[in-house]
Image (cartoon, rainbow, N blue to C red; front, side):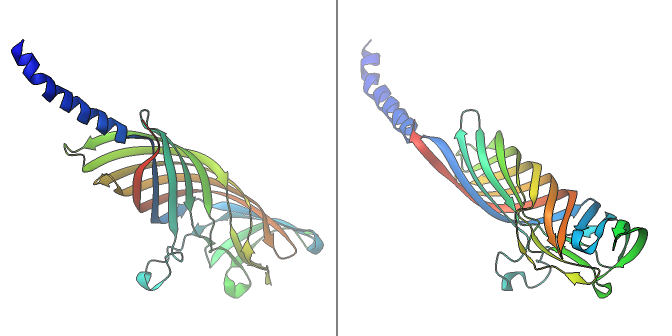
Length: 266
């Protein structure tokens, strides 16, 4: 009995410290990250409609590639020139590790110069099924080089993998999935006729992403992600008309970010 009385102040102090620790916790967790990406694309069909020219044709099975922009002089270029990615997210339910994220990838999609393109449809009002050399020297180019630009609104689920005893190192797996618009910058020349290049809203995309995130000292994190995306573009500006296209992508992203507690205290 006497021992219990003596221990009461110690127990009360420990409980008070625990309550103070709990009070420091907040309901949510906000994070943001910036990084760079690399893409691979599926082949695609590009459909072109130019009513005033009597053209309505499809270039089938076109190959394409990205343009990372980090192969040389990376640190001499503005950070927005290479293919970049950013993430803005908020874990609104830390207990269940559920969050919402704005997920943007500035990707570049370029139809490969020098390939043979099969053209099926009508040209100048006449039915055609022919092949052309798709090259800049032959009057053809098709760039989404200032961005194919995938914007997604993602639901995020986090699973904890590892945490050090002092909490200074944490490793988590994040699963993400969402849908959103694409914001392409179109620049092209078809049969020697160039469009006026520029940004536009041009369709939609869906994507899913798996990421490994290592967080250091509770705030700074490094994240590696693999992502698959399917995008459908429509109403893309070409000379005297519009184009549409759809393709799949596999994307790798490496990002550096910062996270901190946010929201009401709990």
